[in-house]
Image (tube, rainbow, N blue to C red):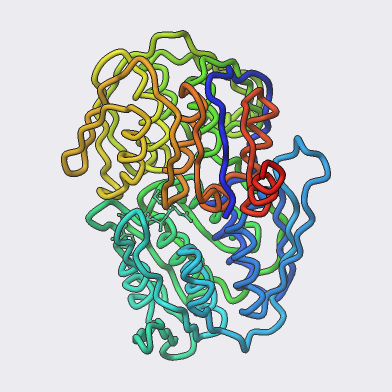
Length: 448
Ligand code: EPU
């Protein structure tokens, strides 16, 4: 298993293009199951999760060819998808267990093929992650759903899904992938579907934009009420994936924690306002310039002074502060001058990074979904490990700022969501290396 070795203390500076969004690209890829015509996605990042989704789609009769970007500064490669065999409808455990986003193939398969069998995704390191809202939404449209051998088996009663009024709010807010799943299915249903308490995340809006380009009739995506007038069939389309707001926010934190000076291109400032607000409160300077009028693909310069102020942060559904940046912000606040308070409202157990940060000298007190972060003067390098993507990113950030050497183990978590993170950080001046077990064995041999 690969690990990162980081020598802390280097100040990051330079320019970086933010990649296309992982969490938009995954459900966008699944929409190719809704048509037999080609769907072409641009700015798709080169990530382990994307590879897994391609494998899954291939098993479901949908080929996905990926041409990586030739220019290293590009926002991602191009993916061409085409569904050619609609008799394959079983998403098996071997792939589903690697990636919970597999669930977003359920709605499209059911709507187009009338049948789907998908392994029930289990919990994961960040807590229980049920799919009851996805299933409730599809049932309201006339799907008959049973469980067999750990698989969800869904069948359409009466040939075609029917429009319905569906409430998708849950105890922790709405569901992001659930909204995309139900919206995609409703695009081919008979009649009108209204999703109440829909997720407003920009990734849902991106899926709606592709569906509309394919001929779907969708109104209100990005608001809590989405109306979908079902159509008989959808055509192929070409679509550019939105930039990854979480990658952008992570590099903003990287600039801040190293007192750096970074310019981010293809930066989705418009959908990062809550994160920018918190970072500015902490004393980080973020200056957007140029870009589209909607500020979804703009340029932003991030600089930071030496003294960071403590702040309060609560994660919330969009447009609130995103849970996917909570861990990275915690790394930063470990070095603020005073006590910060972080409350996690989406995944109350998403604190795998807390114990690891403590090993690096952070002073953290967790009580339920809240962590009090008492700022310290410095973090010190240590071997650390986390079992989820964003917790691992947090540890890399801490390592960049820490005194001495930090070894972040199990970086396959990072490879799921950050394209070539070590190369991109090194390009900006970080002292970071990837070490594979094989390389390590050779190094020991050479020494011995
Ligand atoms: N929930 C339910 N029932 C459901 C679905 C969700 O109770 O049927 C709960 C969840 O347990 C959670 C909350 O509702 O407490 C929100 O979950 P949601 O369904 O919105 O999460 P998701 O769609 O499965 C996506 C991202 C996550 C991100 C969340 C929240 C993808 C592939 N994943 O997950 O991203 O944290 O939205 O914004 O889009 C990450 O990238 O690191 C990541 C975990």
